[in-house]
Image (cartoon, rainbow, N blue to C red):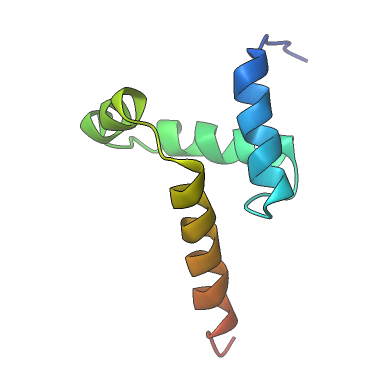
Length: 75
């Protein structure tokens, strides 16, 4: 098993994402981030988020929008 160190401010953001329901756990949030990187996400987009990170409000609205879209699917 590999061990990594994650800065406290990053852990706080992960905890906020879990608390707002965007991910069920820190592990799931980290897995999604690693999957996005491994899938070849656009480096320019990643750079833009590093330069100008999403606000808490933007993340909240994004999570809400995603939940609403899923709730409307006839699965």
